[in-house]
Each structure stands twice: as C-alpha cells, then as structure tokens.
Amino acid sequence: MQNIELKNKTILVTGAAGFIGANLVTKLIEKKETMTIIGLDNMNDYYDVSIKEFRLSEIDKLVAENSQVTWKFIKGDLADSALIQQIFAEFKPQIVVNLAAQAGVRYSISNPDAYIQSNLIGFYNILEACRHSYDDGESGVEHLVYASSSSVYGTNKKVPYSTDDKVDNPVSLYAATKKSNELLAHSYSKLYNIPSTGLRFFTVYGPAGRPDMAYFGFTNKLIKGETIEIFNFGNCKRDFTYVDDIVEGVMRVMQGAPQREVGEDGLPLPPYAVYNIGNSSPENLLDFVDILQQELIRAEVLPADYDFDAHKKLVPMQQGDVPVTYADTSALERDFGFKPATSLRDGLRKFAQWYKEFYNV
Image 1 (cartoon, rainbow, N blue to C red):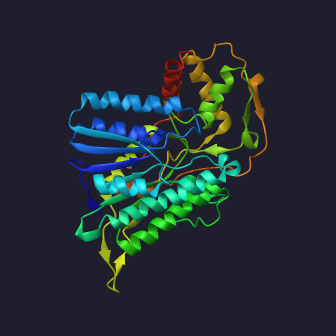
Image 2: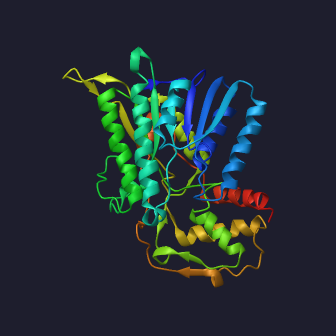
Image 3: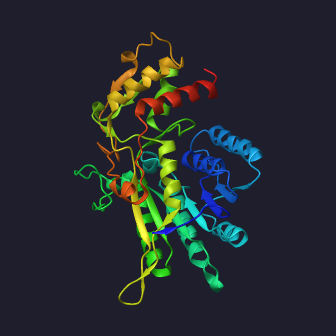
C-alpha cells in the first residue's frame, strides 16, 4: 500500500453538498492542514435543497476560521464531461473522492434515467479525467476513492457480507450501477494504472442526513401524525452506520492507495481495492424504530405521551429491497486499523438533537 499525505494536496470531492461529502469536507478542514479542496455538486432537488445549503453554510463557517484551507465550490453536474475536463485541467487534483451519485433503491424504479446519467456517465467522466491526468508525463491522480454500496450484495444468503463474495445478482438498478462502477474502476486501474478504491457503504445515518432514509422520513411523518410503514412486517435488518464512522473510514482509505505493481507479463497489475464500511451489528427495524421514538421523545421532538402503536403499520417487502445488510469489515480493520463502533442509540440521539434545532421543533 502506498501512503499518501493529505497535506499540501489538491483534493476533489464530488457530491460535496451531499450527506457524506459535506461531512468529509468538514473533517478535512478540521485537520487544520494546508490543502486545496474542490467541491462539486449539482444541488439537485431529489430531496430538500435547504439541507444541502445548510451543509455548505457550515463548511463556509469552518473555512473562515481555517486560513490554511483553500475551498472552492462548483455547482455543476458530473455528467457534464466538458466541466469535468475543465476542473481537472485547472486544478489538477491529486486525490479524487467521487461521492456524487443518484442514491436510493426505490427511486431507481421510478426514475432510472437519473441513475444512468449520474452513476454511469458521470463516473465514466471521472475515470476518463483520471486517465488523462497522466498525459504529457504529468504525475496526475494519486488515488481515486469512490462510493459503492452494500446494495451490490443483493439477496446474498451468506452473512456477514464479505468483499470476497460474488456480487453478480443485483436486485435494483441502483445496485447495478454501483456494481458497474466497481467493474469500470477495475478496468481503468488495469489499463491505465490508476490506483482506485471502492467503498461499499452500509445504511449511513446521522444529523443533516438524507430525508429519503427511514430514520429521517419516519420522523417527518410522526411529527405530522402520519402512519409509518415498516417493510417486511418489521423483519428486515440493517447495518446502520453513523456518518462520522463512514467519514473516518474514507479519510483513512484516501491516505492508503493500492500499490502500483507490474505482473509477470510486464503489464500493470490493477492497483485496485474494495472495502466494506459498516457497523457490523445489524439492527432489526422494529428495534430501530423503538430506539428512534425514545430519542425523539428525549429531544422533545415528540411529546412524552405519543402513541406510536397508532402510527405504525407493518407492510410486505418492497420491490428492490433486501431483508438484511451486514458488513464484514475485517479487511478494513486489517489494512487501516479501523472499525466503525458508534452505537445506534448514540447516533440517533445526535440526529434527534439536530432535527429539533434545524426545524425549530
């Protein structure tokens, strides 16, 4: 593994106004080291744009206090190849963290175009830009880190999910695009010696998260007195992973690129790796809802006498969903000495407190 110093580097973060992206930029700035961070996001309205604007405003506040960090935000689309080429030509990023993607399993059923544009064409544009960053003898991109997803495991029966498992049977278009990212990255790593690492994230949650995620959507509905639907009659399990743990994993991986090596045939061995980042402790959805309701009451988002049973409905499995997600993170522990460990209660407590303040409940 090749160690990469983040100090004095130019880092491109796509999806920089997104949940993981904004938290990553925040943590990079808090390192208080000299670096240039270029953020790209199209600010689409897949969910409430005011949350994306809030994240960016928090970044701006931090930058004002940290003069050693140069921060530039560009509003633009990953699928715009001319823009991506321009960003690479102007800023010459040495580390690229591609977090921009159309997220969500269910949305991919009703809006497939968004996934092809962002997750396939957009990622292809990033790979091409990385490839050409070495033109004319330039040192180019030292490490491409990109978001994959636990969705690639589909309905694999073997748990916990290991990166050694076969993942050829996606059950949603979203999962298929993420598996495609891994395949494309592998081929570009082999052909052009681009060090690349894919990260399979497991159900990320936390403050200022995505409103389409269960914990956030449930909270919005409960406040309005609406009924929440719990899929597979509550028999789903999810490996909920707190956003700070995800970002810590990303930052460690950024600094450890797969080694460039030459094979027996004299051609490059692909400097390519994939890791799971998950909490390795799946929670039953009914238990998760129970903890969420306790923390919402504790934060005074909901009244102490709220009748949850009257607002809960157990429904069948949804198309594209899987019954369980469970990360085997042994490779991450082995190579980077890190294992996510934030408990669901601690994470949901922080979310509930943020929700109360943000929405002035």
